[in-house]
Length: 191
Image (cartoon, one colour):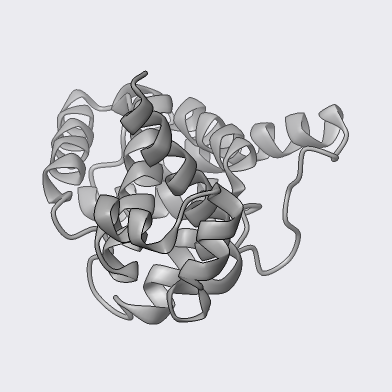
């Protein structure tokens, strides 16, 4: 990794913590500069305005999530359990998603410019519906939304309990099992 790449990463890491904690409006470039050890002019030189820095942080986490948790439509229950693990490993992801929803995209599609990503997954779901492993009576886009939101049941936006790495391993396993069973019963065919 070059010095420039290391600098960009230090800024992204500091900005991730700042945006996840304070949102877009509440984030302060001064705190990002202090946390990263970079000057404000350096941050602006690398990322432009604060909004552009948020976009870079958001994009990095969303893309990283997609890379870390490859989607296989034939394995919806297993995918939900893997997403649970990824949300646990990257708690900033769910918080960044919430801030974006609260401060920028209050309705509609949350990931402008990433539509192709979801379109591929929806096509894979349609193929599995034709193959008979996923319920054919539900719209593939609704299946995708239900899958993602169910997997996030214990993520940072939880209405009940937020999972943390401090939870006992058997608790995490119980939740993974519950997710897989719920997805299997609700979205998959019972062949």
